[in-house]
Length: 199
Image (tube, rainbow, N blue to C red; front, side, top):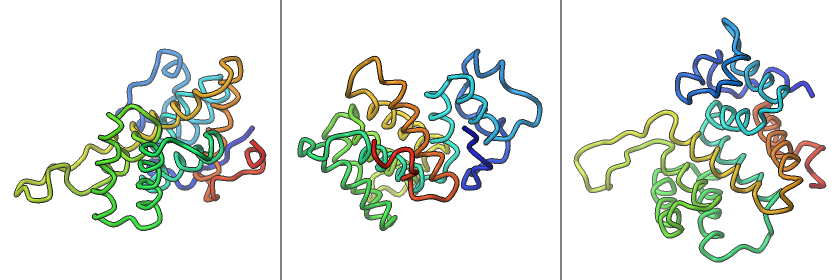
């Protein structure tokens, strides 16, 4: 499948992605001079390196779209009914997507911490907390800005964990489904491409 230009990506070139997250040896073999960021994601998927394509797409999307991608994958792949603590983390992530305020960003940290930063929802909420502002307590005089790759890294982890539940033999299909949701978002869609609506 051809993914298209992926106009929502924050970066034009693959090198902008690979300088932030080190590529695997297999990915390095695919890189060419002046390869675009969209071209790298397409090449990775074509080579069967779907989880690596997911990690780079999560890094390349604007932070709000990346968090929404995690939320859309949760809606597609995870049960509607989740444990209360996990649901709270997802609710915090979605609240920030709909209203990306500083208050909502900071509010996402507590539910992620309550889950010990170990679950899909925890990583989605942590991705929100790492999306901007300062990582220092609100009363602190010092400003500690998050690194540029932090939200993408957290969302990549959330996505992969969301794909785990289910038969082991079909996890590849779940990875592909999750990637298509992200590609739809990167192309300006809602995260509900036709291929995934019945998933």
